[in-house]
Image (cartoon, rainbow, N blue to C red; front, side, top):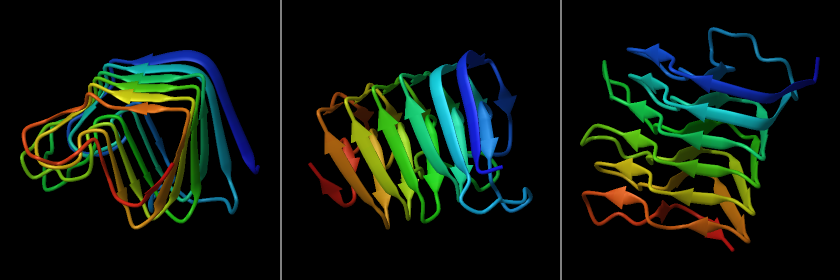
Length: 178
């Protein structure tokens, strides 16, 4: 299997008190990772999930991810047990994440030590944001919209604004090309 397709559904109300990915969790060390796997998610509504780690809406590691025509909203990370991360999406590994015609909003990273973004944390990856909106996400210590750590982000025809933060950190941190 080199491609997994998931479309036309709502994922809501999941709660993992101590780990990542309450809505969707894919590809961490305890799960074998097929080489060159691509996740195609289309028409999803991932909302109202909570976790103690990060990526409470979607958390992936070492996969390519295409998120199309979808909404990731109102997910929250409580930063439990020494972990922490974004409420919305956590993406890591030397792979590509394409956010296309989608919205990431109202997600929160809920600890003062969270420095990884309320909406999206992209670690060591290539993030492409195309025709999308990232707004009204919150973080107490890090970038409230998007945090790009060790990778790059390209933005085309998109809005990243109006994210909430109790520090001076902007909507986006990291390497960005627009």
